[in-house]
Image (tube, rainbow, N blue to C red; front, top):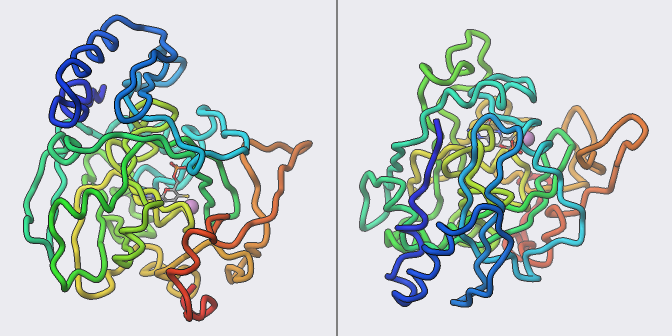
Amino acid sequence: MLYKPNYKDDVLTSEITPETDYINRRQFIRGSTKVAMAGLCMRHQLVLAEASSTDSQVQQSPLLFSKATSQHRSNEKHTPFKDASSYNNFYEFGTDKTDPKRYANAMTISPWSVRIAGEVKKPGDYFLEDILKPHALEERIYRLRCVEAWSMVIPWVGFPLADLLKRFSPTSKAKYVAFETLSRPSEMRGQRSRFGTIDWPYVEGLRIDEAMHPLTILAVGMYGKSLPNQNGAPLRLIVPWKYGFKSIKSITSISLTEQQPPTSWNKTAANEYGFYSNVNPEVSHPRWSQATERRLPNSLFKPNRIATLPFNGYADQVASLYAGMDLKRYF
Ligand SMILES: Nc1nc2c(c(=O)[nH]1)N[C@H]1C(S)=C(S)[C@@H](COP(=O)(O)O)O[C@H]1N2
Ligand SMILES: [Mo]
C-alpha cells in the first residue's frame, strides 16, 4: 500500500511558517515532478527530493526536509538506496537479508497510531499525523553499524526524538524510554513462524539521556523519500552510535519508564547483546571480533573492510554520557 504522509498539509503548516511561504511551497510541490531545489528560504533550505521512482515495489513519497548541516554530513560515500533497501534485518518478515524487501509490503502502514505511555503528563494513542505535525523534518547522514559487522552510510529524514518526548512532558520519574514495534502476525510472516527466535513484539529501550541526545532521531524517510516498509516505515528510531538492532523499526509504542526496560536481543541472548550496545571495537561479540566492519556494498574483489570506531565515530558527541562506566561490563 502506498503511504502518503500529509507533509504538505500537516507537518510544515502555517503553524510554523508564514502563510505565504506555506502557499509557495504547496505550489512548488504541485508544480514539480523532477525537482532539485528552489531558493525557498524559511528557517532552512527546503529540499524536495526527486519524485521519480525506479524499480522499488512501493513508490515512495517525496518529503520536504532541510538538508543536513555540516555537523550531520559525512565525507564518506553514501550506500546506494538499492543496497540500503534490499539488504535488511527485520525479523518480523524473516531472517534472510532479502526477506524484508520481499515480504514487508504486506504491512499496512496507513492508518498508523502510536501509543505514548508511562511517565508522561499527556499519555494517549495518537495518529501518526498528529505525532508528526509540529516537527520540521531534517536530513541526517549517519553511519549504521550492525552488530553482525557490516555497515552502511544512510541519509535519513527525521527529527530529534527529544523534541517529541518534550511535547508529552515526561515526569521526574522518567528514567528510560521503551519502544515497541507493531505486532501483527497476519501481515508479518516472521511473527507466524514456528522457528522464531524473538519473543514478539520486538522491543527496545534507551536511557533517558540517550533518548534526549541530539543525535537520536525518529526517522520517517531516507534518501529524500518516505521509508520503504523494509526499512521500518512509517516511523523508526535511529541511534547512530549503537549497534543497529537498537534502531527499532515500525514503532507503535513509546513509553517512559522508571525501570530499565527489557530489550529483544538481550532477552534472546543476554551474554551476547547488552542493553547499552554501544559500538565498541574493543569488546568482541562472543563469536566474532568487532574491530572491523564490512562497508556495503562490497564484493569478493572489493571487500571494503574498514576499522570500526568507538561509538561508531560519534565518540566526541556521546562518550561523556558514559563517563565513569565500565564499558566492558555495560556492553
Ligand atoms: N522491529 C525491528 N526493528 C529492527 C530489526 C528487527 O528485526 N525488527 N532489526 C534491527 C537490526 S539488527 C538492524 S541492523 C537495523 C537494520 O536497519 P535497516 O534494514 O534499515 O538497515 O534494524 C534494526 N531494527
Ligand atoms: Mo543488526
